[in-house]
Image (cartoon, rainbow, N blue to C red; front, side, top):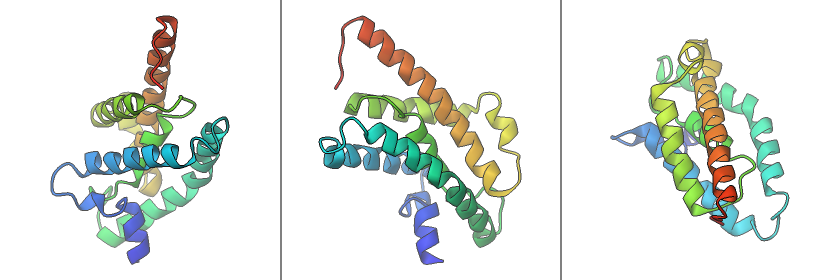
Length: 163
């Protein structure tokens, strides 16, 4: 179970004594930045497609991990489980050009949406098991995705390039 715990707590970030969801999102941001620095030049035109495919492939395993986490912690939607924040944050950055500014901005916007849980996130969070844990963060990620693309579009119109 140690490997699974390592994963569903996002490298133990979920054990942060303060704001474990924010700590998990920070891990997601760090991984996103490292991935782009290591692979961005090699896979420049296809990295967004690779990330999209990876997110799709990881949906079911992440939900199952969250199911197991509820059994492990013997509680519904344990605070220590932050793999949902990782997946939601990455969703919010799909098909954007890489920039540190976008990464940080998406971090703030995602955390706001994850905390306020706009419709239908709050209602969907009540779904049973791992799906309920994951889905509200996917919704927050989708809201983040829309806002980030609007920001990128506006900046492009203004001639401001952040990458």
